[in-house]
Amino acid sequence: MENRKPYDETMPSGKQRLPCFSLQGLRFILKNLTTKSHKIGGKADPTAPKTSDCNSNTPFSRNQRDSMSGTGLDDGLIKSDNVANVLDKALDAGDGILRLTPTWVPRSFLHPGRRIKLHPNDLYAFGADRGGIDERWFASTTEAANEGRVWHEGLSFCLFEGKKFLLKDAIAEQGDRLVGKAVFSKYNRWPVYSKFFDNMGPIPHHMHQSQEDAALVGQEGKPESYYFPPQYNNVDNNFAYTFMGLEPGTTKDQLRRCLENWNRGDNGILDLSRAYRLQRGTGWLIPPGVLHAPGSLCTYEPQWGSDVFGMFQSIVEGRYVPWSLLVKDMPKDKHQDLDFIMGQLDWEKNVDTHFKDANYIEPIVDASKSTTGVSDKWIVYGTIDGKQLFSAKELTIEPGAKTVLKDGAASGWTTVQGKGRIGKLALQTPAMIRFGQNTEDEVFISHDAAVRGIEIENTGSEPLVGLRYFGPDAHSNLPANGAWQKHR
Ligand SMILES: [Zn+2]
Image (cartoon, rainbow, N blue to C red; front, side):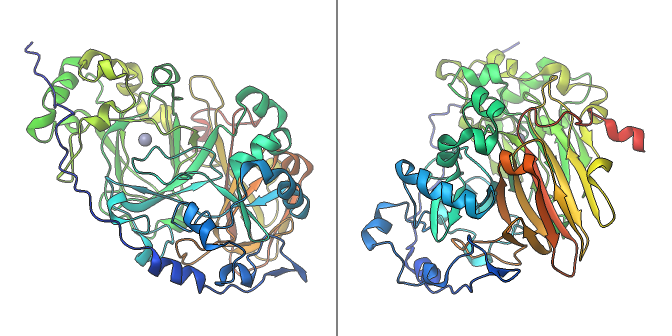
């Protein structure tokens, strides 16, 4: 077969650098935000933003502001050397639960879906040249691998009495207490994260490298999983279907031609795949090396803590995808080696005749944690290549009900509906969030608190619903892959 040379990645991509818009207006808004102090059961919430934190009389000098990222998100930051003291106080005050602030991530090649509660005027708050904000990361110690990133992009901040510190620094300081001895001694970090992924249309058919392949470029592999929360999916947006894998019977020559035709327009890779309609309240597991072109439902995505990928589709909704996004996480000398590039796919899993049975997820109620007015469901479960890497649950508490939640392991918690409290901290699902504003919808439940048990109460008039995701080997009773089929 003729071996045409694929697109030369050194050619200009046509992306224009636009001047960065001034952040003064944004700072003005942030400075003038007023937030009342929050009380729970008559006691002040130790993590609630104080009025003074949001005024122009912040404890931070102009110099300090200017030395930071310019986004305002890291205002009040405590550097890693000084985290120990404030971390102790925060853990004591929150009974082992840490308040987190919203972590927004822009993507230059995508179109925001506008469902993650960020104020519409703030979608381009990082600068239009950085792309729109279409992701919010939860309890993350993983950096977003964006070109032109701010220094803390992707990293979650803890908030205590108006001061911020990185969750990453907190875990470096008190790993055993926060993520548990087993996880910390094995990984030396919180090795997973989750995000809301929110786009107007589909994104390119792509894969994430395996551990082995990612290691060639000094990175970690990335299995991932999806859950489509109904609360964040009032509309489908442009294409609520996800292409996954390759049609059984597809040959390697067929796929090779797609790579050879990269610069001729649409390389036709979707003609070799099949799409599944996305259903709210269900999910999928996506092992490394498996192609997927996520559709336009807003997705909660527990995953391994890495941002590696390779895009295999050259045109999406009329927009060109540069070859550089196919090979960005492959060794430099392999960037034109089609056999090597295709070799990063897990071929058997891509052409699996029972792809849906292997990877689709429906929730399963965990009867051991559910009672009258309380329902705890497994929403992400099963193993990937026999390993329990991450998992997630959805807890629903009816108005007036409460429960003591005991998990065997730490988790990142996000409230998606209603209001209440978790231990001593308030929970409130925001209707709209300004960029830089703190919220009461996200916490990190430390290993110690999870094992001891934490009281969660619904104090509102609608169900209180929280999603929480776990790290590796968190459960001894995790349902097996496909376990939902027994409940059909
Ligand atoms: Zn992906």
